[in-house]
Length: 272
Image 1 (cartoon, rainbow, N blue to C red):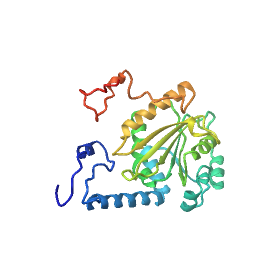
Image 2: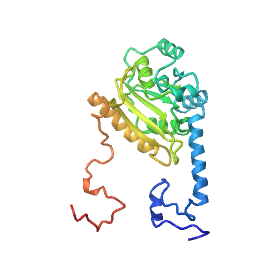
Image 3: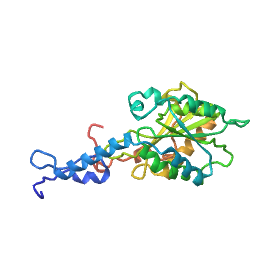
Image 4: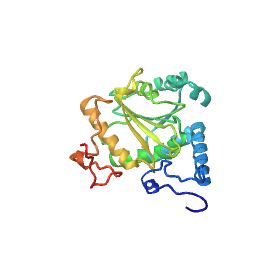
């Protein structure tokens, strides 16, 4: 006990998680320090949802760093308020953006892959992680034989908008990079959604998701390796979604090796 705060006996477990566990107590209440930290995290999560993406600056930095052309687009949601109230509008392109994409010159053969970068529910995630993640993939893993469509940045976009973008671009496979719903310890988490043969009307069981891409979560290099594996398998097998499993991390590792850090290796369930 210190300063009237009674420590929680599970306090050692906090080294394994950013979750709010074992905070202790002051009387029957939460101590002041974790209460203030909670209020700050809540405010950061709310801000992440409402902040607008600077798509022009992002396009400029992506083009300069990666040497790939960028096109800036907008969903059918006219503003942030409409986007939050009407998820359906974020899943489709606005009329002007649809016309702009349709007018782009397409190659004789379809693009092998298209990247769609959408603000989603955290523009902060995209501003922080889109460029370093793409650099990690392009520099280390992008196959030289794979053609990459112009990068498409969509404001007020949700995952499904990538299907329409890729269909209009003529891409065999699409990866949607999107800001995920902020948590109280992760206002800047980015998700990656891969879809083979994207087209309007597809549903989520046809996609593969790599979640929590950020410095305090899944690092850029690890996320790029997972994406590289899924891209190769999707192209080889001609599928994505629930039928395509991520086998990039545990090849050859026995199930028994997946230990639970909460259970001592010397303790076994007597009922097993």
